[in-house]
Each structure stands twice: as C-alpha cells, then as structure tokens.
Image (cartoon, rainbow, N blue to C red; front, side, top):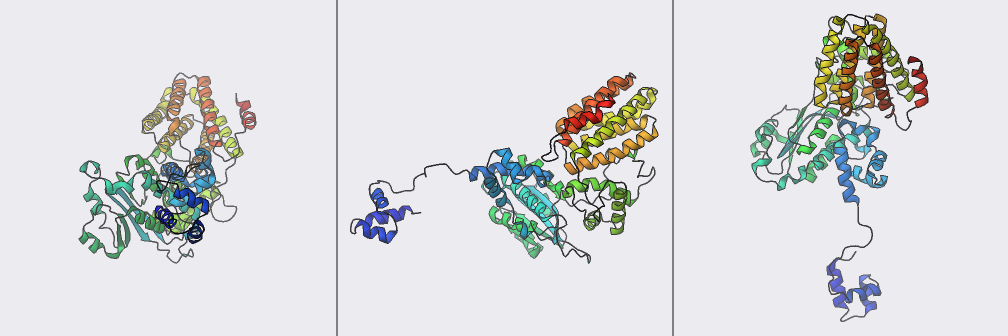
Length: 513
C-alpha cells in the first residue's frame, strides 16, 4: 500500500530517471507509475468493489449482545444464532464477538466481582480475591470458562452501545443524571477490594486516588479501560447474571443509574414463590424453614444468575460462598433435590437435568390432566373456597404492568397452586405441587421470558376465575386447556433444533377432552 507521499516521490523521480529504474527502486509496476504520472491528484481514493461491512457488523452485534443480559450464555446468542438473526456471515459475527471479549484460555478464576456502578462521568467496578478455603479448585472459575467469556462480551458491549466511549466529548450538567458525589463515595470501599475506574473528565480527586493506593486504578482513556476490564473479568470465578440484566436494562439510558452490589440473600425475597401461602407440602414444612429449604428455593435464582445449562454440575462451594452458609448445609439441600428428582445425581454430584421435548410434553400433559380434575372439583365447592384464588389473581393483575417475566411467571404459578389447594383434593393438590416444582426448574433452565405473554396470562386467569365463580367447570377447563397448550408450545420451541411434536402432544391430551 503506497501513501500519497510515496506516489508523489515516484512521479518526481520520473523526471530524472527511467520508468524501469523507478519501478525497480519503488517496487511499483511500470503501468502503475504511468497511471500515477497521468493523475492530477495523488491523494488516496475510495477503494472500488464491495464496501467493508465489519464496522457496521460490530455495531449490530454490540447492540444485540448488550441487551441480552444473563441470556448471553444461552444458545440464542451463539455466533451461529447471531449470524442467523442478523443475516451476517458467521465469520464476520465471530470477529465482532472476539473484539468484545478475551480468548477462553485467558479465563483463569481467582477473584470475584462485587461492585458495579455507572453514571456520567464515572464507571466503577470492584473486585475481591477469592478465598478458596483450602478447596481443591486451585482458583479455577466456578462456571465453565466459555460462559465467562460470553459474559465479558456482554459487559463490553453494554459499555460501547451505551456511548460511554464518548463521555469525554460531553459537556454541560444536563448529562449528570447520577450524582457524582455518590459514585465517588464508592471509592472508599473495603481495603481488600480492587477498584477499576473510568474517569474521562478527571472527576476523581488526586487525594482520593492517593488514599486508595494501588488497589484503585483510574483510566482516562476508554480503550485502555476496556482492555484492562476484560483482563480483570477474565480472572473472575463468575460474572453474575443479575449484573448483566441490570446493564442490559440501562443501555438505552446511557448506563445511567447502574448500581449493583454482590447480593447475599440470607432470607428469600418475599414474592409469590416465597410467600407463606406458597408452601410446597411435599418437601417444605408448614412452619419455619431451615437453611436447607432456603437454599433449595434460592437455587432457582442461582441457576438463572450463574447461567447453568442442562448437564452442568452445580458447584456447592460457589453456593456456600454466595449465601454465606456452611458447605454441609448446601450439600444437604442438593441431596434433597436429587432425591426429589429435581436435580440429576446419576453421574455423581448434583447436575442440572437434561430436558428433552418429550419431558416438556409429559410434564404439561400431566398438569393439564390434573388441572382439569382440580377445576371440576372447585366448581362444585362453595364460593368461600375461591377467596385465596381471588387474592392470587390480584397478584397476577398487579405483576402484569411491570412487564417483568419472572414476576408474571411467579404470580401465575401461584394462582394455579391456589386453584389446586382450594379444590379439596389433597392427592391431586400434592401431585400438582410436585409438578410445579419441576416446571419452575424447567423455566429457569430454559430462561423463559413470560413478559410478552403477560396480557394473555391475565386474560386467561380472569376467565378461569369468572367461570368458577359461576360454577361453570366446562368453560374453565376450555380456558385451562388453551392456556397449557400455549405454554407447552412456547417451552418446547426453545429446546434447540427439535421442533414441537404435534402428533405426540395430541395423543397425550386427546383423551382429556
């Protein structure tokens, strides 16, 4: 590739030397020298042919990956899936993804991410060395290295798509949606925390940097900041999905208002899944819950947060450290879930079960059949038994406007559980509860998002309740069958390349009509 200066020097040499001599000296062919001599302008010209698309592809891939959240670890965000979604070649998509992350060989483990905060003009991340406590893991990542590699790409993409690299060009107070003082206060963290800061405008006072010492590294340049960030993240045991979800939700807001801390959940969050009315009689006591039962409930969120895939072995050491409970308690909870067939223990340890299309159809066919029995019984009972069902319906109606898939799912399954409990059929209710536990696990593993279907869920649940209020079992069952049919098709459609088996589903449910 010749620069304009090279061309001008070659043309000037033609005034005193022959074309052959200049060609031998410059390496340009005689025809090229003649073409240069005939040009009036020797500046670079736009290259002919197909325009480069990598830069555009990078922006497209960044936008998709930045808003993926914890789902970045799933099949929907593999390079093949991104290629199919964008129409770009897989090689181009792969180059885009590689630019966002690090080689999988560089993922080593040894520290954990404990803090992330962002708001113009600062980005702050905090890390802490992992205390293995004599464990034989030797600091290796707590989850598969390729999953951490994907999640690094999610964080880097969020920073780029949110326009953080252009903060140095901003001016004026209208961009300061997050108080800078609140962000600066985070720099006075624990002494054992390692801080990485992006500060393009020099907002961090020199005395604060001096006080923090070597544990705080402040970058003014975005490229250097992202490069070190990816390197540090590659040394993490895990990158929590809850952080990725928060970043994905704030990308459109320029990453304003991001404040994530390491969550230590001793008591479960009070939602429909952990409310007093949502006891699971088969393995949760009616009075107080033990640490083992808390862990079993919290494992569902842990599956989502750590991005476990079917077949992955659950790391009890990671659970123990995150929940700050003894390792023995974690092991007991996992053994209980293996005994209840919620986890797979056939290959040693506790693993996320492999889910097939047949498993999904089997589960939903069983729920459909028992649900019909429950609805027939409930339609014959006095109206006072519908009071807890009505309260559960209000939770569904309240969760729908939030457009949170997890909240809608929890409220809807709680509504279904109250239908079973109000039926007066103890064996049917117990079996239905057991199937609900397995369904929640399926939903977690497949990372189903129910937010697009929230309006349909509310409509179906209202119709079922109205029908039962009129003692109209037939209509309630018709709505129930349609509700289950939509759910099973949605879930089965996420099981990779295997398509929905319409014939099998019809055979399993035909006799229920």
